[in-house]
Image 1 (spheres, rainbow, N blue to C red):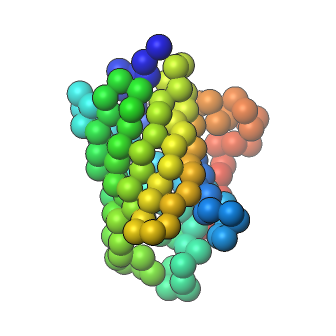
Image 2: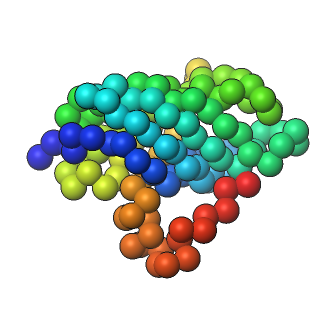
Length: 132
């Protein structure tokens, strides 16, 4: 079964580095899906430097059926100003996306869950997620 027709909304997720070479990093993504064209923003704790507590990025890409392909471009306001590519698959119920990210020679995995699914899994306190 293919993924949903629309990925718009809030997604809570995390990305991991290969072989534990970095921290598992949580993020919040706000996505707008217009007929398969994706755009939005992300925010995550700043694990790259000390100029701020969090990093923000712009997200752009596409969805075709259950395939998702997007780029996260850090805004350069803090310690990051590079792009990271993400390729993944939407679950058959449309509640999660899993896949891989890549940046040059580095890569890792990621997963994202719709906000309602995250709250169901984590309980009532899940709506208060500390990112920074």
